[in-house]
Image (cartoon, rainbow, N blue to C red; front, top):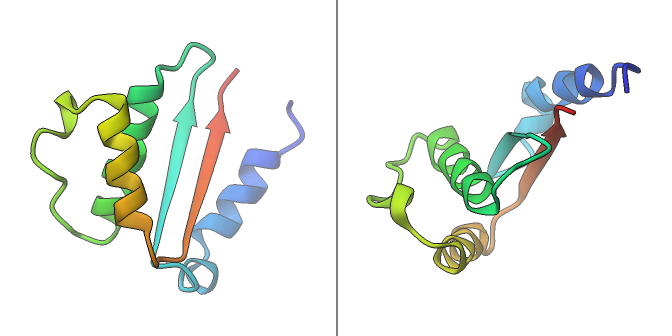
Length: 88
């Protein structure tokens, strides 16, 4: 840790020329004791919000397998980038 990796990746991630190559993107912060459903929910919300689309209703109560199916369907035929940033 402490080598500036997050800062470097954030600069690339925030660069419009880089982001322009992707249909959608998500930066998700992951804690050491993360819950997979929360990670998937956050990722889904970032994808939709990044494209200024309405987040699906009931997203906060969807189970893990349904979230995975939703993400797979949403990302199908799209170019995307996901950054999972650990904070421990």
